[in-house]
Length: 392
Image 1 (spheres, rainbow, N blue to C red):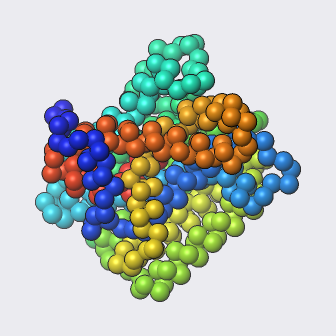
Image 2 (image 1 turned 120 degrees about the horizontal axis):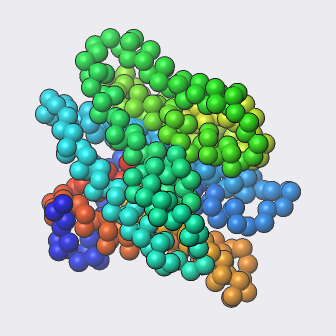
């Protein structure tokens, strides 16, 4: 792999990666920033003691795991849209180029953080030694969604994403040969409903006694996360066919209306406190539909300016590295907060600051240098930051 390491100094690479790009969609950036913010809130709030009279924001924070589902919808849309764009330009899909691009974008930062965890870089973040070789091996092959993601829990979603990347070109080939929009919609609906059907079957035939059992069987495996990707895929295909065009007013109403519904739903109660049929089967579909609506609105709002564009762009650009590195930094943030005799606000400040600092270092020293060339380091990273890894 030809890695460009001497293109620019780390500071200049970082400044360039964070600079505006005319090809960006500020509203997709906002969604990616929202996704990583929800994940950070989720993991930070989990380590704090929350009383019975939890506030609206605290409940949203505990439910921040939904940010990963937003990442999945964004990935489903952006990866598929990128392949469709290449197909329109060339008349074919270059599988080897697609694979190399995905590997360069995902693997270096992931392996870097995996290595840091294994060598004990993160204070007080211990990894049990039991069967460590086996666990590392299946992490190297992106199987941590099927087997326990017990090195750094956030890695599970990369196993899910990797499987989508492997499948999406082959799912797209037959769709490109179908002229009937009705048939595409029927196939898309079947794909979207496949996830809830699989989860219902497993839930109905398996005893889910606690959250851990739910997580291992109905949350982390790829088969449990089908509808976010299917909806993102379908949005990209329908957009290419000119079906999803909305005017600025309608797109804005859809965007902010969907955000309102999301906020009310996430703040209504702790979603997975008592797991029932709704939680196991329909709830993920409901969230995916909200996120798909947000993506549809965002792609139609691209010509509209956002006053939050600089903040969203920053959050979007660092989101992958931040997703990878924030969780093992929580023990350090807690230790510093306690050592300094500070309270909860200080924990959040330390947690976010230390996590963002590490994410910027990974972005400058790992992500950007592994782009293909000097010219592509300028164009590839900004064009691909919007949702191609879960974070992700």
